[in-house]
Image 1 (tube, rainbow, N blue to C red):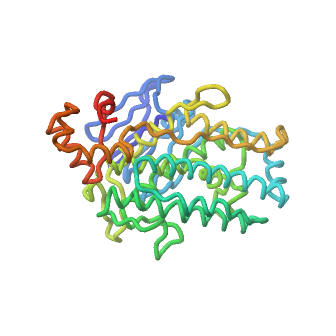
Image 2: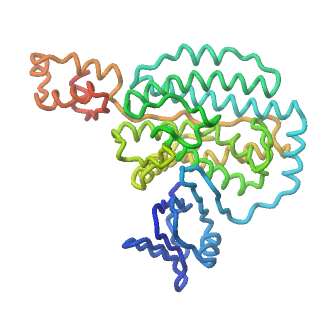
Image 3: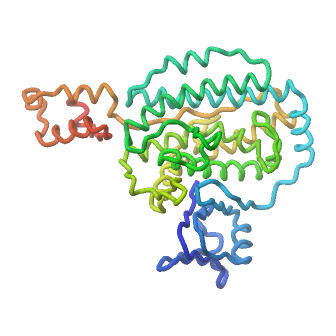
Length: 390
């Protein structure tokens, strides 16, 4: 995954002598044919232009264009020519119309989403004060026999999940006043009234564009999902498969909040909605990119999470087409490479002057680390210091 973000006003994309030229004020990027390092272009701008030749150039190089709305939601996405597979689509429709098959596919989606959500919460519990009791209790309450029951089951787990995440959000950015993913005006907070929801919305829009591209490449129909209901102008299959990887966006937002964002990193519109400033959006995309480019073991080989997502979309197509008898989504739990666990923080806070001298730790270094812990900031421990404290 390597997107290029274009944000703001006066963006121009055109082709000159076979080169793609991107301009914005003093910014100029000259991209040669077959040497473009990006797999997508995200346009979060208001005024600008793109030529037909530039769109053709990007299509030939398999580079999608994701156009975001003013509030960070995905407005549209261009895709290379769709993989044509009428037989696959017909079988996809058949699975949807068979209640047993639909429930089975939907339950596998929820099963994997729950596993990934719990994996993230468990990983975060090493660094934050998290209570796993509620989410574990809801996971055990498996009592559905239809889609509505499955949705209620997933909703209870999601509620417990967001309760714990909200504790982390508010510990990192109390001034942002995150309460939930719902507000009084909308079922889901599409027009964010706080910075955390603005970050989540933006991240989910990026994820949506990625999932759409994979579905388009495989040749499934985005309008036929299994967990989410069919509705006009909706893409249920995209929403279904997004569920499998939302935890990556959630963690990316936490990582960005750990850098201590401020209110000044966001814009408040005249309708009192929140949107990201260009640099904030760029930083969030970098976090998401880094997490999707991490390598995990998958089917006895090392793959990026981005590629694992594609393979799981392919897994669904293989089940739908009848090539495999069972649907087995395989998504690794996220790995958090940090050594400042809660236990380690407690040990650092317990170091008194006498113990500091015995450990041969610099006085100012210890004071600085203890202050960061009191302020809820993340700390970085080098191996030499970590070994001493342990």
